[in-house]
Amino acid sequence: MKFDIITIFPEFFESPLSCGMLRLAKEKGAITINTVNPRKMTTDGVVDDYQFGGGAGMVFKPEPLTKALNSVITKESTLINLTPKGHRLTQNMVKEFTRYPHIIIICGRYKGIDERINEIFEPLEISIGDYVLSGGEVAALALIEGITRLLPGVLGNKDSADSDSFQTGLLDAPIYTRPCNFKDSKVPDILRSGDHRRIAEWRRKESLAMTIKRRPELLSSTVYSKKDFEILLEVLHE
Ligand code: ADE
Image (cartoon, rainbow, N blue to C red; front, side, top):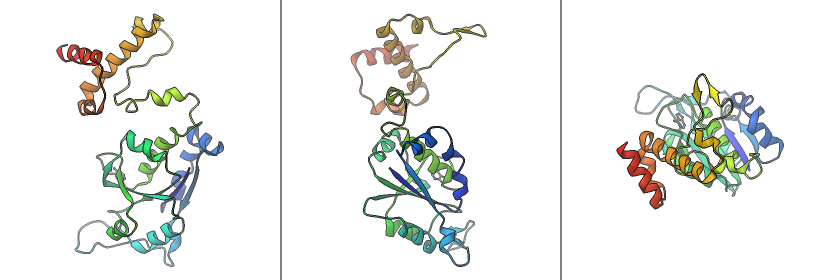
């Protein structure tokens, strides 16, 4: 899978892409990542200008972005414009993106990009959450990491991605490792019982309880068994 990142801060990506899972994914050839700097596509180095209609905040000019996009776009490309105005990113969207061979990510800066880029190139407009960052770079890293860890052969243990929060539609149950007793707090006995059926039941209950408490809106998109309903009723009455 190939990523092209359109950014005026290519150096921002150097350190995060050179450690951990992303470095390994690059070394294994699961991903290739390239940056394109729109500032290099200008003669005067200027990539922003005032807003028509007035108002605070500069706008990313359309010409340097167009040149940057045209330098990497092919028939296979999917374009993503990262913006707080976009559709909110979900794990299902991340999963879908793993099927795309080439993703071009536009990292906006300033108040945003000139709207005609959206009209002409029709990128998917995506937000990573309901808060405002100073640009799309942090969001691009989040998106790339989310996609890359799902690509075949990237994570050592496939199960660890399959059981993630959201991947199952629910938040994860609490997890523990050694020591068994830490500052007078003990690992729940059930997890040390070796009874895998009861452990699975305990985890499902904890997941459902955590989800109903913190993110009840997630419950509407999950498939439930009769047992789940019993657990939910129990949790609601606790
Ligand atoms: N750029 C600025 N804020 C953003 C957000 N929340 N998501 C994606 N891109 C952004």
